[in-house]
Amino acid sequence: MSSSAKAHHGDIRLTITEFSWLMLATETTLHFISRLIKREFHGISVKKKNDRETDNRINSNRARLK
Image (cartoon, rainbow, N blue to C red; front, side):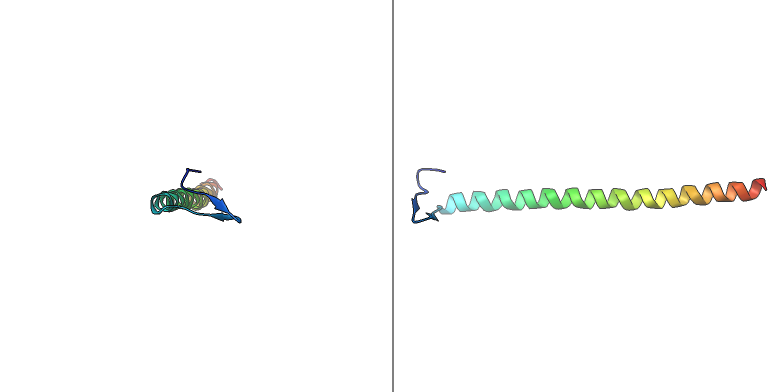
């Protein structure tokens, strides 16, 4: 902590600048995590769709060969 943040009876006091940086860091972290989660779910849904298309193609090829 900086010299301006002094603990009294468990209190942590932040200056406006420190608070602003803390909020910015929190917002950036949450944004990054949400992007990561969206990308993971997007990857899963795309993978499932591609697997379905592959299964359909295999099944139609089998039907043609019979």
